[in-house]
Amino acid sequence: MKRSSEYINKGELFLISSPIGNLKDITFRAIEVIKNVDYLFCEDTRVTKKLLKEYNIDRTLDSFHDYSKGEKEDYIISLLKNNNTVGLISDAGTPVISDPGYELVRKSLDLGIKVTPIPGPSAQVSAMIMSGMPIKPYLFYGFLDHKISKKKSELESLKDYPFSICFYESPLRINSTIELMFKIFGERNATLTREITKLYEETIEFNLSEYESFPKDLKGEMVLIVEGRKETIKKDVDIILELTKIINDGFSLKEATKMLSKTTGIKSSELYNEYLRCKK
Ligand code: SAM
Image 1 (cartoon, protein in one colour):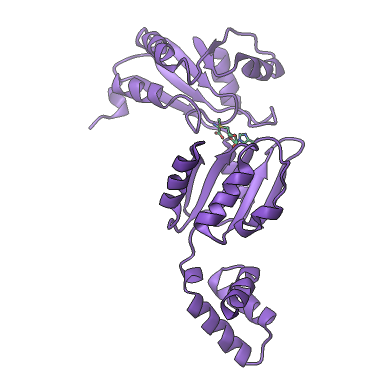
Image 2 (spheres, protein in one colour; image 1 turned 90 degrees about the vertical axis):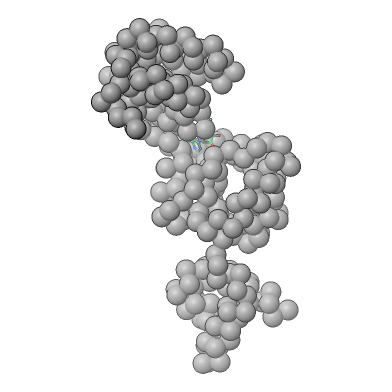
């Protein structure tokens, strides 16, 4: 057991969250820490300079990329061991979340160095809360592998997960990813949110089955949320039985799907399609 009261080094590593678009989305504390840490590391110095300029902060920046991680990590650790305070800031959002920093945090803790988060924006949280998808609980998955075979096996492993899943994806791959998800997950409701806090912020609610008509030219940064496997949807027979019972009571299919939707939480359009599919 290790308790934070037992940190042996005086250095401190601050993980500073930064805006994901709108530069006003930064906390007073983040600004204070940015101004006062002995050393400040960021991914792309041009991106962070823009942020600092907005707040009239003029200070030296050093870079910390995925590809320079190893040697930079050793350097940062040596700074921390020499009792310096170090800030780590990402291009956007919360460091370590699909961004560099995990190994640095691990090494720091192993060496008894205090790690302090400066909370703030993260695209996944904004996307989840505005999605209208069930969020209690949800899985943050981040990026799938780019390689198709790896991506397939990742999706296979997520197929039976019963709660919403949040993915980061690039506009270059979003259409093929949605198609692949449909092939592996089947019909599922999904939400794509792009350019959060920016001028062209947009949310698209759809079903994975609509992959063919999904817009092909979406640009910007995006988060894809897919609902989890619904136990009930697998029980085609139950759905058909329930709907048939309601219809036999004198209701139309449309009315029946609306009623069943309220009790199961499954979209009425989905129940409608499922009914027609099974009756074919
Ligand atoms: N650390 C960041 C965070 O806390 O959200 C994530 C960094 S990751 C390298 C970048 C990905 O985050 C993008 O490809 C996109 O999926 C998502 N993202 C970042 N900013 C976004 C925004 N404004 N709108 C939608 N998605 C965003």
